[in-house]
Amino acid sequence: MKATLPSTTPQLGTFTSPPLSINLSFSFPEHRRKLSTISILRSGPHSFSYVPLRVSANSQASAPASTQTAEATALPSDMKAWVYGEYGGVDVLKFDETVAVPQVKEDQVLIKVFAAALNPVDAKRRQGKFKATDSPLPTVPGYDVAGVVVKVGSEVKGLKEGDEVYGNINEKALEGPKQFGSLAEYTAVEEKLLALKPKNLDFAQAAGLPLAIETAYEGLERTGFSAGKSILVLNGAGGVGSLVIQLAKQVFGASKVAATSSTGKLELLKSLGADLAIDYTKDNFEDLPEKFDVVYDAIGQCDRAVKAVKEGGSVVALTGAVTPPGFRFVVTSNGEVLKKLNPYLESGKVKPVIEPKGPFPFAQVAEAFSYIETNRAVGKVVIHPIP
Image 1 (cartoon, rainbow, N blue to C red):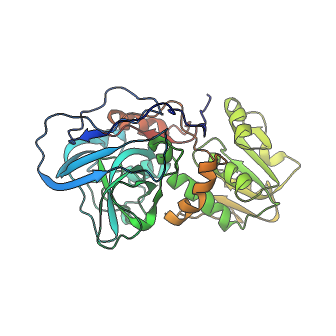
Image 2 (cartoon, one colour; image 1 turned 90 degrees about the vertical axis):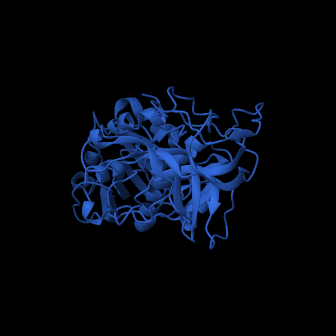
Image 3 (cartoon, one colour; image 1 turned 135 degrees about the horizontal axis):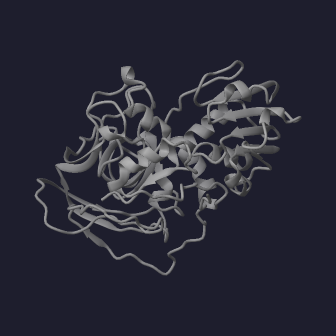
């Protein structure tokens, strides 16, 4: 399996999208679109009730790969969304065309969602793994979002209507995540959880970043990782692992980055900056004579990870049982982290990695959930376009 790393060279340099008239009829997508194609909305009759609003999507700079001009004269009262009213398997997911558009609080903005992404936490939440601290059912799932601001709350200072933004909409992943998530046409998000979308990325690419890159960054910070240190990343081809490799090398200044994957993904690890790519189907990483300052376990093998760390080193475990001195943390969504990392994304030093089977169209959210639960995804599973 070969993942595609987006080029930092604009792919649609000769294409200028004319203003699109959006009347929010949202015809349902039946075919997948290429990653570089951003399908926003479609015209047609509608039966929604409206509140007057005019929106122009004005990107912070020219971005040929994702340039979109969206003009709307109104917002609907209802929207299309994926919903589940009980915990369980993929079969509990239902498509609903009459979900109320979320109300915007004073510190929030309303986003017209252009793309979203799935994370393992989405599946665990749907399965009821942390229902004691979850928001009430029914739930519109989804943490990651990329889209355009269409309405701002009275206390919002840094964002305006038309801004292209991305972020992880839930400040605490496991503590009261929002009832109305990003797998919908609209979602309401606190301004502090968002950042302007990197200029060189389209919405699908940007949607694949927030929760994973925040997790990668916070985990590295918690280990005290710094320039000159070495790191071993378990599951280096996954959504978080692929970004840990890049951040460790490009942002933190690692002296050596090693990472594990299956045979077919070794070249991807090297392309991301891994100095040593370990085939876990052939070699046991804990048997290597070399030990590491930090082991970042993104797969759930902490009992083995602690055998590969130097004395006094750190082991961070995202899932599975934790073996001392390993530790676990739950990421806190923070738009400031995204803002700090935007220059690395815009320069191409850090790139989103998107599962090559995707993006999955909005009609195939259930299939996307099934796929992410196989634990075979390369990078992020993205949902796009969202009508």
